[in-house]
Amino acid sequence: MSKSSTVTVRERPVEHVATATANGLTIHGETLIIQTDQRIELVDLTDRVMNFVRQFPVREGMVSLWSMHTTCALIINEAQKALHADITRVLEEMVDRDAEWMHNDPQHSDCDRMNADSHLRAMLLGHNLTLQISGGEVVLGQWQRILMAELDGPRARSLRIQIFGVS
Amino acid sequence: MSKSSTVTVRERPVEHVATATANGLTIHGETLIIQTDQRIELVDLTDRVMNFVRQFPVREGMVSLWSMHTTCALIINEAQKALHADITRVLEEMVDRDAEWMHNDPQHSDCDRMNADSHLRAMLLGHNLTLQISGGEVVLGQWQRILMAELDGPRARSLRIQIFGVS
Amino acid sequence: MSKSSTVTVRERPVEHVATATANGLTIHGETLIIQTDQRIELVDLTDRVMNFVRQFPVREGMVSLWSMHTTCALIINEAQKALHADITRVLEEMVDRDAEWMHNDPQHSDCDRMNADSHLRAMLLGHNLTLQISGGEVVLGQWQRILMAELDGPRARSLRIQIFGVS
Image (cartoon, rainbow over the protein chains, first blue to last red):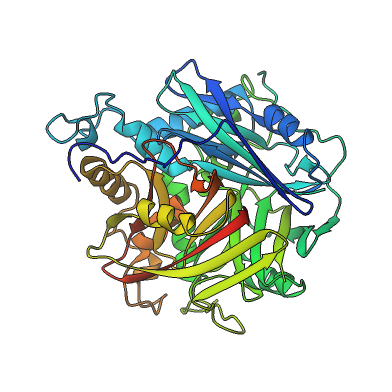
């Protein structure tokens, strides 16, 4: 490894929309673009995911959400302004933006975003949610919301959503 | 967003038991209720999950566990009293229960559980495990146990378990 | 629970290779062995996972990676030497190796590895990744790499990889 980060290259880029079916099983993936406005921001994707799932003839199955970025995470929590401020605060306290991270040091890194904190915070939250579908709808508790955690915005973020199940 | 948290509403509630099959593929979901006794407690669900999986004609596949709560997480770790005390300690040290969290402040939040710490700790652990099934049994290492982390008990907690695979 | 950790016992051990098919659906699992050299080390598995997936007639689906160990985690992040040093540093700062953990105390634990820190750090990172497959290849963003986080090496580590999808 050098000062540069390794680039991941597929033989062909992911298609915006891809579908496969096999004897009653449906698999369908799409790319979602989410625009963020702040450096750290929680975006509630619950309604979008629930509406996506309702479009397909899938009664029982799974739906996977994947952040295509290293500095943008996916979590479950409540959607409440006060709690979202607390989430931002705890991330800022757990990983100090201004510590002398090597990723922010031009001697060791060719990244000019100075975003080591964003990488480290995303690592603690995770980049993927694999949810269940039952009765044609996403399985979520009453207070559970699907939140995208922007940790180095504002940016246009790509998420991949994939439904997988039977009717 | 207001002082209240957004409520997630399905068109119809999750059925306690739901099954779908398609040409050799079985998908089956159920709700498990787990009663906890302490505010913070780790409950070992391994035997329950392993026995659940053995009931179905699924040789290769997956089993998903989903906590229906924001303040109750699912993790993999050893089941040992000493380590569980250490897990409680590290969670208490990483997220201070008594800090002035906005979620606990009636000026900003209508939640009367004063449980910001529980939300923040659960966020760090995660609410879902997606395990592999092979040879008709759950794939786990010798020391791996499936643990439910109660972070705001005692409560009756709902988990959703879903098996997905072929015989 | 005693000073010992509970052992997880399947009726039969996981087979090194296992396959099932059902009307166009392929499920295939294998065990990978990864040798590590340091106590804390990040191993880039991206090319290995991408090449594994390309072997199978799966156009749309999922691939699951499961660490068979409690002290070895799986994460997504960039592969860059500087950032990997930062990841090690943040883990060491968040969970102090030399604190008086009960898991390291012979009065409370029969584990002689003195590795409470490894257990606690792995818990924060997670033991599983469930990735999407689309167009016959793993779905990853340009800077995303699949990293195994060794937290108590050097060791030979077992991972289980399972592909699940249709052609």
